[in-house]
Length: 475
Image 1 (spheres, one colour):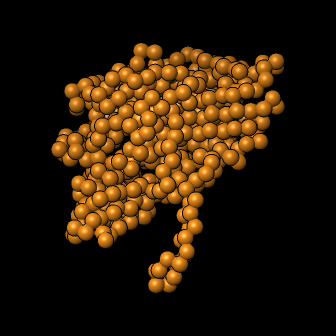
Image 2: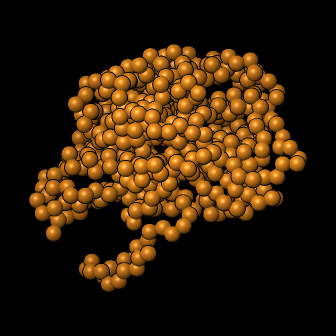
């Protein structure tokens, strides 16, 4: 019988996951599984709560991207309450969201992904981390820290706190932007944009120098999903959901509230994290990728000048067809970072953002109902779907979190890299790090994603001291 290699935990990601690599008698990889073992059940314990509490409750899902849940929940609450947020409120929500994109994308690239790119997949794991960046290039490390600080301070200036802000409510937001905060954000924008351009240079430079690796490393055809505006431009806060196939052909474009007509979820016995897929194609043909690479593979353009120029170069990588290599997530992520910085400038220049018209209140005669809120979180398309009774108490909560959308893609990526690099007869740490790196491309937030209710796979094994299995219970 062959052997099994277990990588546990997968490092430099948020949450807990493991990979098992199954070898045949010759030490060759036969199968690989990406397991997500944690389960938190947030959907179930939200039932019975007033719907308007969800913008505060759901951001406790995650300390990395709480604003994404905060804003998706507020959009769902708008729909439940039958109220539309004011234009100023939408601008302010988007400004907070851009701060979230800056801090999250910046943190992932510099703190989690860059050590592999700068020092090599085979470098000493004891120094393959952000601390080596600090030692060898303190100026770059300081820029990375300042970039994340800038994004977090935008969140703090709007919502009072950097994590778990109190800002978005049904119908808008609870406070206007002050002149002092507007001035403070604008004052740093030019420097932060320069850092964003430097980050793109690092990512693009590595990919160009390692083009063969980039084109083959965890590269596979898939469908892609992301929000777009009516002209097909990149949207992160609002828009319609567009889906393209592996050839770049349009499969669907629909309003977020109709998502269940297009998306279903599949369960595998080796993971608590469900696998979303496109109903029209079935499982597993209908799996898709989201996040920076997914978004750039479905859009036609970007509405800010610097990011648009980079997007044109991105489109040339595969002659206008979807870019398949998972390592290109890093380049796409930095293009989005630059877009978010430019978009902050556009939002600050809009005169309506300084208005005090920050909230519309639900009409008294409207009874609460069902509401769907969708936003592009840093890691991909995020769905919040709430149902209530006539008193506004939640009767049903359904979340499809960004990382969940990428579940089958991460599983596929890990398997592809394992088959390409892992040789069981002469195993090295660098081989296994490449498997982890394939998953890190997607910047997964696993504790965010494992919330599905229903019957989850579970196995309990009772082992003797010598390792013999005495009993097993499974469901």
